[in-house]
Image (cartoon, rainbow, N blue to C red; front, top):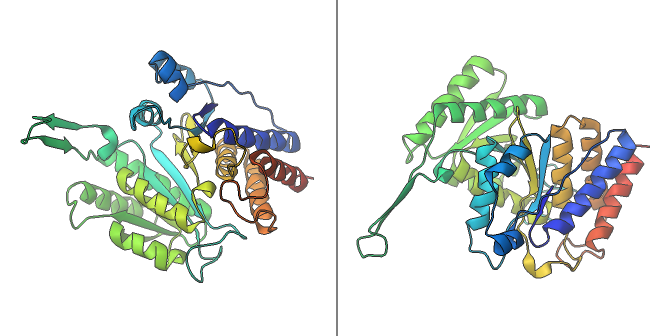
Length: 351
């Protein structure tokens, strides 16, 4: 457990409450260890996330993260020092983002309901422009030059593409995989993606329909026709951007969960919202994204029935209309009470 900053500990507690309910109901056991890495520790000690902690993380089955971000720490320090370090050092090469509109949740898209918005974005998570390759020359002068290099390997693109094809088969929904890129401008790095996508698909996944969209067109179609999408695969930077658009069309950041996956190693699960420091300790925050991330974690750990129960519990509670508004302080319930609703529903499903 990495509860992190701001509201992170509050939503993590509710996620763990639901995991506990699932364990009691479906008969599995688990152990947790909590680490205090985050803004407060950094401000007190200067330490962000040492290599020794990464080595300890390798011995766990999963990592659960609440939120990262502290108002007294410069942007990027904790994000790079914790989030990116874990992703890169543990080779969590897939970022998995379900985009699902739950019943009872208002959608900003006119005429669209849960039947129209149910797809998954597979984002390559360890390459691209986020590797940190590049730098400055003549910084602070009128001649300043800055470069940030987009690093793509065939190995990295292909393993993300293969994961996405496999996921499309497992979902068995539309059996359609979209590549989202910008092949008309990023003619080197996205040509690698294009060839990996088509060569792997043609050779090993002939039953999966392959589609392509430039990223600007994909943003348009996410809004106009989200029902066109089943699984989307894309690079690191574009995935970072389009998944926030996906969060909006599914009803907001408070419902958006993600997994940073190493299918053969240790994965990390988190809600995608920030640490919302102004709400810390007030019990006003919606914990559903954090709970959904815990459900994703259970699925990755092989507790599939329990994971399905968590997903169904979220669906049932939202569909019941009990929670009128998911905004901070407008739910009609405290953060803890929402966790109680989901935990109780998980137990009811398991009877």
